[in-house]
Image (cartoon, rainbow, N blue to C red; front, side, top):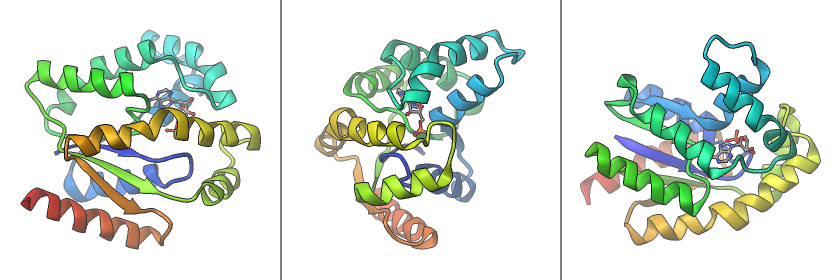
Length: 194
Ligand code: AMP
């Protein structure tokens, strides 16, 4: 199965993607985690990771989006690695219409298809308080506010993109972790039967 998870900061993308990957035996690719790691470990053995971290640092710290070209190139390389051949969950990618279109082109080239886009719906004030409480490098209040804004302006339009392609599953992310996971599994099961 190939699936993308959409949602603002603090929507629970990481928690739910990890659980789902464990449950379904899929590869979990979280672009935000990869970027934060590349920034925190600039002496990494992998020069492309170090380069990505250097480019991304300023954007990530301010809560801005890393430019599409860099993200698209990163995902192109990542999804062609052998461990990605049997299904994955993309957590935090795509985030713009351009990224979504390019992902479809890439999958076409690879002879693969995206099964589902899961949207974790969580009110802005809950996203804000959850993120600030987490306290990661890009969870400072100003950066969180900006990430919420960018979710609405750049990422929300993807809901329509995937809805038009009959791939969108909406899940109430403002529940206990287990309940959210159950709702995802139930709706995924239902969509596979359609
Ligand atoms: P996340 O942990 O997914 O909320 O991502 C943390 C930060 O990484 C974001 O605020 C962006 O600065 C950057 N980032 C992660 N994924 C993307 C993406 N697909 N496009 C652009 N920037 C991204």
